[in-house]
Image (tube, one colour):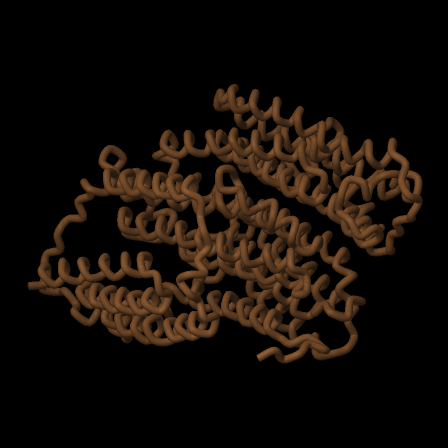
Length: 172
Length: 461
């Protein structure tokens, strides 16, 4: 049952990810991206990472995608206004990306990840918030704390760049 | 560890000092923060037991990390007085600039002390995000806006590639810890998972991208040219030092067992970087753009030291990054004054500088000679250390390529000297404030001193 679900989710994830790239309309791209995030959350549940699955939906499919949609609608992007790229650069990028894919597939097709045996001491709660919190506040305490410096720098930067300068007109 | 905690707090203090109207107190506070952090970093020298238990397995302050931390902080201390224009410019926001500068320094120090790939990623992101913001800090300048956007998009993409690599490494080794990955490589030497190779490859691509190593250097010239002069100087020195220290740390701790695999990649990139960086620099008409390509070419020399991987390598990277940083600070100090006075960063702006300001011309000449690698300067000793570490492992071809390309380097560095001494200028005098004078004296003396007696710092390891 689980492996059938895995293949179904993977198929859906790949399909929607491809549609993100191939859609002409940016709004459709964003909507397909939301679908991709939902299928990825399904994968997290299969991997017994329930908390990550929930957070992925809330943060990515919720907050960040709304921001995406807002910006796309705000800028009023049209498919006709797409920039023309030359044939040469199209061929070059397709060749480069294709070669990378061939190399990755060739290298990774023989990877044997082994199988997980169900042992009696298996803890089904390993992906829940309680377990995660314990690890976050013991083993990974230092990176957790230092991540605050990252957010502080980003916030200061955002305020600095977004602040209206003296004499600037409100154009909206 | 003390250094990082202190610097984070200092950053917040400087941010709040922005409420006061006294702007020169801001620079003083930032300067004192860096000096205090420098003292704290040296305090941990030979005393790894100070590091608290919370840092166990996450970061380590061995002597090599402290040396690189010291290079970063010395660079910051020497650069800071050059930012005096922000104190009088009504559009500048010095409190935010200095706070972000201090935060980015936290990231840079994390990149030289990490023991865990999570810490590397966090440090790299703190440094990168701060630099994206600082690149675009001149909001009214279209070139700076373009540079910031380009840097942000390219950098975010490179971070993505790096993270993909880290995920692959985790898949292979089952841990983010450098020593655990080393253990995995050692134990399964004949049967390594292909994921390890792909992961290492992706991670190297991400790192080399941030270090502006060819063929991942396309963003460098535009970003370095578009950013405000002071922040260009900051990023071309700090990122190189922190990045190469991080690169060396990963490879020397975790991937000694697969040396054959990464040597070829780094060697090809090094030669490519040297050729592209040096040859493109000769064609530039703008001093600032020439310095951008010069930064690319110096990444090539440091990459040779990493790729050769002998017991002299750490010393070579340390000395080279110190010599390069000091000479680059001088060059950008001169550029800032000339560009502010004459409104142009082209070579033509330097015409006749020797007549109007002999001291500045002399300092810039010493810096150019050091970057070109002429004897009696720090740059020469740096190159010597790099070549010796490569020759020890018998990589003669790499050294030959590097020597040939440094001969090309002499051409474009001397163009600046010729412009200053042998061309007629328009007679507009370039003046120096006391702060600039002190920094230029310090960097010039250091460049010559390290070139004559390199054992002052080279024997520290």
